[in-house]
Figure 1 (spheres, protein in one colour):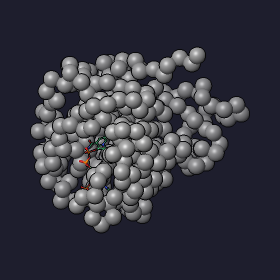
Figure 2 (tube, rainbow, N blue to C red):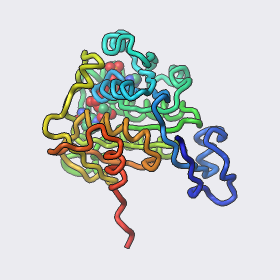
Figure 3 (cartoon, rainbow, N blue to C red):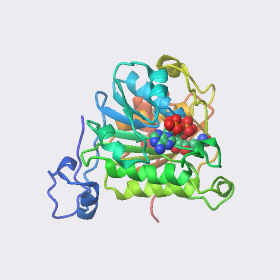
Figure 4 (tube, helix red, strand yellow):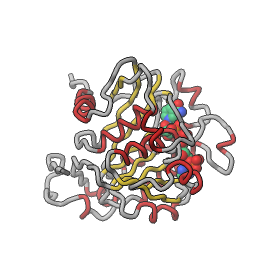
Length: 294
Ligand SMILES: NC(=O)c1ccc[n+]([C@@H]2O[C@H](COP(=O)([O-])OP(=O)(O)OC[C@H]3O[C@@H](n4cnc5c(N)ncnc54)[C@H](OP(=O)(O)O)[C@@H]3O)[C@@H](O)[C@H]2O)c1
């Protein structure tokens, strides 16, 4: 059940006012309205931007498996068909995030948005046609954030470890063409939007990207002996993160209200980890605390 908590409302605002009554993200921002704690339960419709990517494929398969409906956003209808066919609960949403006019149709009827789009950090074939980090990690994210209805219950954005350390080794090398700078700018658009958000910052991704597997095959993948998960509220992790763990963390986070408005760094390590157990994930997310002020 979605819950609302009014403790974060500024004085003078009607505590019974909901997000849906606010007119736009910018209006909510300027009013200071912040109604926290809405969980996104199975049965809800989630738009997955980057559904054909490594994390996105796993996430789409996991969401469908847990009873969510998925609008799979991609620029490529054939890829969507090849990956997911006519999976129950899935509908395609053809759009290019760089083109704001393609987004309203994709966002129709959506309760939550997860954005796990990306491109390469260094010049590659994937940059052809204007798909560089500035367009992909900043302009596209900004377009998606601005196209979201104010009634949206959650926007989960996947960025990267190092977004706040882009001038420090080794991240300065990764950031030579600005990928971390633009990812941080994308985060800032979301933070300033007034939308209820969660940001996940994975370490270097392992496992996948699994392109061309079907939904059932995707669900059978494991990260071997490194299934445990490290979370931090600071951009202070190093190492790797399994795409399987990142996708699972996103699914599990949707049903948790207290994660809203937080930025979690995520890494993988040796051990069994929380698996698919909601209680273990809830304990893991809530165990990560800001250090007490001195
Ligand atoms: N690789 C790493 O080690 C690493 C580390 C930390 C964080 N990350 C970040 O984690 C996230 C997931 O990474 P991944 O490797 O799983 O992703 P990925 O396989 O590179 O997939 C990226 C997805 O984004 C889509 N996309 C790109 N531009 C788009 C646009 N303009 N409109 C619509 N879709 C667009 C791609 O679709 P198309 O097929 O149409 O291009 C693809 O489905 C990304 O944000 C990535 O930058 C990666």
